[in-house]
Image 1 (cartoon, rainbow, N blue to C red):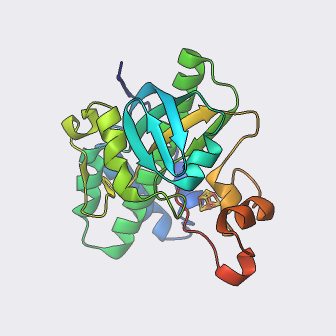
Image 2 (tube, rainbow, N blue to C red):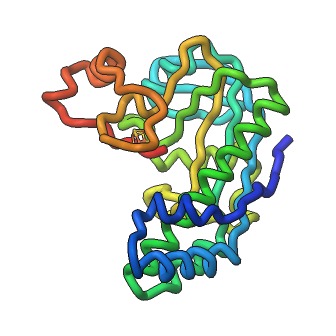
Length: 234
Ligand code: SF4
């Protein structure tokens, strides 16, 4: 059964100042934009328990849908169930953000969207923990690893019985979600936790796990310094 829930959010102005590095006269202007765009906030998540039915080579069959990724096959090797999900800051807020022509105002609005998305993800994780008893979260999403295309995000929408489309979300030709501040993928439980950050070499304040050179090298079959870094998204 697909679960749809709205996620709570209240604007933390200190977090806006910190995240957007507001200083001096720009602070009040930035907060005014964040307050304005937050009037249209409506974060939500959609999720559903799905079953890993078979894995062969780079094919993973989840509740009847075939996904193609050798790395996904590898990290789901001992996993029986996943929680498919989509979560977003909401269509209305995204449309409001796009209405800003001023670069600074757009920058602030996009930062506020990211805070809303973070809150929605927290709400989703709390729900999964309560509903399905997950304790050791791992998380993977299309586009987070090189061999799992964003074109497969649409398959996750299909697993969720098209609910994200009904709620106003769209996909671009390359499979990217609109609103941009949205995430989709699978949560799953595993003894050895996996985070996208383990394959990402960026200097990032949101890092959830250290870069794992051995994992990266085994995935790429090479030395990370020779090939650059994998493209990561959260
Ligand atoms: S960019 Fe994303 S994947 Fe990379 S360290 Fe930051 S949160 Fe992790």
